[in-house]
Length: 228
Image (cartoon, rainbow, N blue to C red; front, side, top):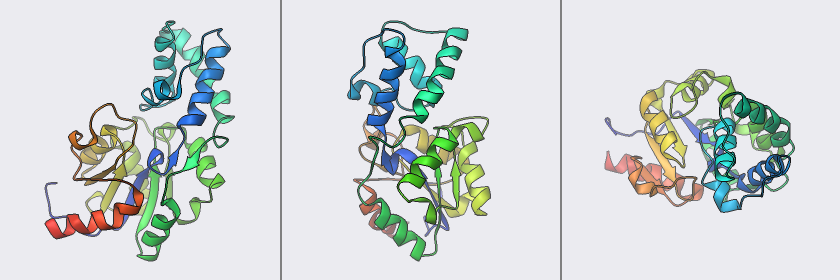
């Protein structure tokens, strides 16, 4: 962190830090694979493939199934995945512990909030609406709303523009190296939550602070302020 940390005017959350969507994503992947007579993948396999958007997920899934796709074949599979994915948004997805409490806490503290994700924007909004989480969110930005996905800063900057907050007054809360890289590129500090979709130890991803879960976030922010 290149400057002293102060209480932010806005907090941006990665969608996967607020919900556990891996079971639904696994169901969607396996429906797509079954349509091509390919065997299903295990939850842990699919979790290791998440990150980089739906197209990258499809590419990784077919590669893991021994039937890698390139070019137009990958394009076609990605198009086939779209309606399948929309059928598997909320059936198996669950809230991460502490989400409602933390969003309410920051709302009452006068902090603006948004969600930024590489998932399609309509899908992200449907998930958040399903769980009643949109009330305190002033921005929901999906990967198809910007030119470049995280780790590029585009989604973060668009969300902050919608919230009318400068990057220097904001904080990114995520669970992956892409979240840290996007925050750095946008000029924001970043806090990571344990348990995300990363194959690297979360402590090695370069965040300003790591905390165990969302319920620890307010105290983690106070520690950053005290250390500044």
